[in-house]
Length: 343
Image (cartoon, rainbow, N blue to C red):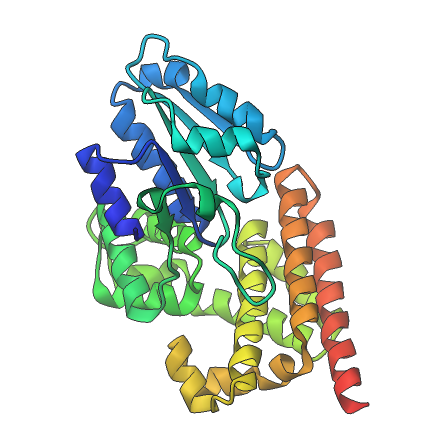
């Protein structure tokens, strides 16, 4: 089932008793939890009685099963949601529960990464235990499809986003759906258009080409292994940018480089890659050096380091210190990759 089909099933009240939603899109993961919560508990005062949210990285799998077996209190249905469900370990108790679930509980398993088999990972055991009718796969959107999603998602909040505005947001902000929605909200509040509407001028005023130029300066300094310039650019950006947004953009750059490297390995030309990624050929050409300098393991290491910084920032870590250390490491990685290539 795709995410649109999942939302329709939520509206009709036809969800399976055990549902897995998986894919690398934190905004849609949040939307999934919000949609199910709203459908089960239209009276928000009952949510605290009927909903339990757990973390799959910390809670034992059998504790999730025990929670799902608990009978509702003052509500007709219980919702047991598990974030980071990819962290759960297979147990006989869970397998038995998936075969015969508690009819008064909806178990919602939210994995913020794909559970399908990949080149460097096996298929997650949850996909073999949960019936196919309960598996929801989030597919990453690109280009126009991403802009269409943004307009529809903004409309759910009462915002009307023009096609040009959506296109600019995707071009300047990237494919991070949470960042896109956040910038759309800012443009609606700070723009000159009538309340509730977002046009291209509003996006230009709020997102601004200067901001994107600053981020471009940061990523190019990292690629050139110019640690001093990268740190100075980071310090300037932190004066006006949210640390998490900068981290998101750095993650996007790493993922883009990895994707370009993989497509090059498959024999695609710059023009073919540009069409595949919905990016101008010049953008792809400008990233070839960094992409060819990296290896799958080096890109994976960079992403792991980025996610570690994200965890530290969310745990109260000092943004300037954490991001500065990350920028230095990314610059060193680029340099090491080029050195290896030359040798």
